[in-house]
Amino acid sequence: MNVKGTVFLTGKVTITEAFGEERWKSFMDKLAAKDKFFSNMIMSVTLIPVDKFIIFLDGLCNEYFNGDRNQYLMFGMVAAKFALSPGGPYQSHLLTKDIKQFVESVIPKLWTTYYDGGVLTAKFENNVVHIKITGIKVKYYYFELCLMGFFQQSIKVFGKKTVATTVRSISSGDDDIYYKYELKNS
Image (tube, rainbow, N blue to C red; front, side, top):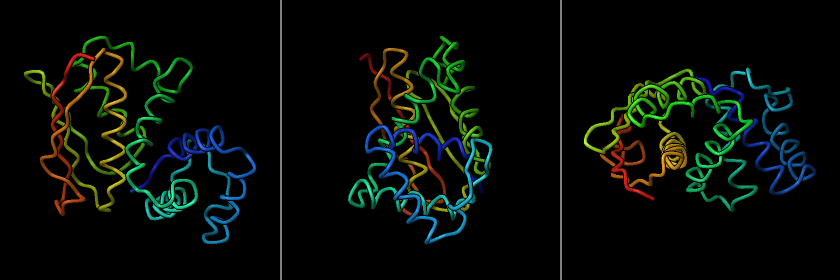
C-alpha cells in the first residue's frame, strides 16, 4: 500500500504554518538521517510506501505532539479543512449538496485520492452513516483516526455533527474498520 504525496504535503503546510519553516526543515533533516527516502523531494504525485509513511507519522507525533498518536484525529480534521476549503485541491467535491451522495460517492473517492490500498465503502441510511475499510494490509491506527477526523470535519459543511460508534477497529485487533456515525444538527 502507498500513500499519495498529497497527504505528506498537507502535513508540511500545516506544520510549517504552526511551527515555522526552520523547525520543519530541522525535522526533515532528522528524518532523512534515519531513512534516505526522506532526502528525496516529495510531490503530490509521489507514492510513499506505507512503511515510510509510518516512519514520517511517528516522527511527526514525536517531534511536534510529544508522541500523542491521538493527534491523528486532528490530522484528519486539518486535512479536510485544507482539501475541501475554497482553493483547496478537492473543493469541487463540495459541489455535492446531497448528504447521501456525498457519503456514498465522494467519501470513497477521497480515500482512493489519498491511498492506493484498502477499500472504503460508505452508506447513508436512516440518518446514520456506515463507513467500512477493508483490505488494509498494514494495521496502523492512523488510518481509522485520520478517517474519523476527516469525515467529522467534512460533514460540518452540511450543518451536521456526528456521534460515532466503533463497530470494528484495527486498534481493537479487528482486521477491518467499521464506524457508524449518527448525524445531528450542529
